[in-house]
Amino acid sequence: MDQAGGILDGAEGISVGGFNRFIGPLYRLPDEPDGRTHFAFKVLDKHMNFLGTVHGGMLMAFLDISMSRTSRLASGAKSCSTISLDCEFLAAARLGDVVESRIRVARKTKTMAFMTGEISVGADLLVTAQGIWRLVF
Image (cartoon, rainbow, N blue to C red; front, side):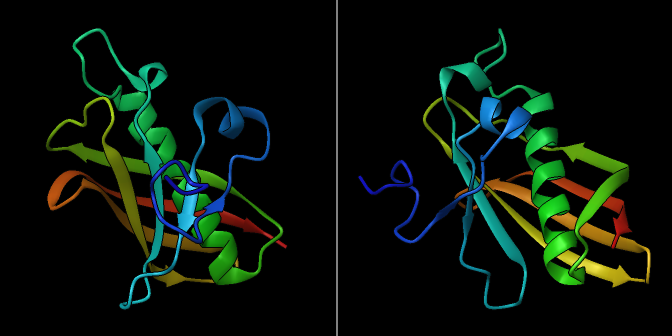
């Protein structure tokens, strides 16, 4: 098992403080060949709901973190704020799964980043999302 909990050699830990540290560990993986940013976490007991699947709030928080980080990477902004995040839940993740997000900047203006994202476990699509972030320089 590598330093990223079995996720991937070379993964960068991004759970450095606050809420992200509490729900992590979360990792940034190398970007996809198509330019999408790529993030992951391994499902732990603390991520579960009473039904035995990953809590939807955890998946939304993971998307919010992935999209926020992507907006800053793509724009050079020093910070950003979520304006909207719309999610469609398609399937569930389970204990021990490696959950991945892939994020694409659909459009960027001087003060906003418009993004799409998806969460998957292997080839199974779990969540699709779109959101808008306010960029602060």
